[in-house]
Image (cartoon, rainbow, N blue to C red; front, top):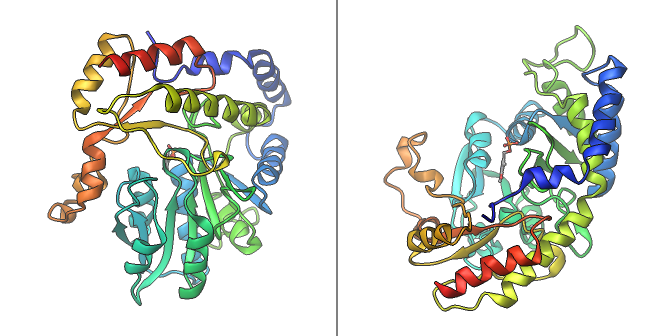
Length: 365
Ligand SMILES: *Cc1c(COP(=O)(O)O)cnc(C)c1O
């Protein structure tokens, strides 16, 4: 069987380094807010090309705390409109609604699944205060154009970079384009911890300090509480795991690109629509998503051939029960994306034989 993602094989490559790092933390006797987190924050900020990195408990918190910090700083207030792609993973939208901001869902560009400057511009009103640019499936959004648009309208830009560690435009990486970016290190992400973890990157020192305080009970200084914060911190042990994984991230991205290139050049059948890519550097292939009008049949056939696939995502956010008021809204492009997408096996340890088995199964279908 070709698994959708072989996490065990990925982490087994670094077993000795991971065990050594875990041992170091266990023997240090220091498990929260110590040297591993500090070192990872510096290394990840450096990797992304941003000035600050703040470790938090997960990717959803990275997004939620950034918007919350902008509220505390007086840059956003309840009811402000925040533009977000309608076809995103629900977490991008939860971060907005949790802060009592108003998500304004915008249809993506069909070829990239990401926000496009034109549809984003058309959704801007006098109440719009921010844009959440999601780099879906690992492909960075058109950041130069979105930042220009944001500048023209005085909007804040938060990158949801949970799927796009290392994706870049003109050598400038995801996480360094917006006013801030939220990353997830959920185990299955391209940079994955061995448990939950997340981070925010930003060049804004005041924002960095505010997020750090909000994630630590609202406290900049022990026993002084400026905000009604939460507890959302990156653990030492996860930071130590991430420091190991970060050292191998670029090689893993290269391996993912090779898998994607194999699929793109070998899958040839009119019933399967392949993803479109701009520059090689812009996509880090968190997911390799094809489309088919007969997606369910294709998924079933591939499963019979020993190829495991997943759907990202089967139900769009506006049709989720969590948002009952949106049930009557229609986003035809988003809905058609959700009805037709299928994610093929993808990962840095997928062999050429594995790619070939996936490709043949697709072409035989
Ligand atoms: C995974 C993900 C998140 C949430 O990250 P967690 O660490 O699981 O909380 C947010 N946005 C996108 C696009 C994601 O893929």
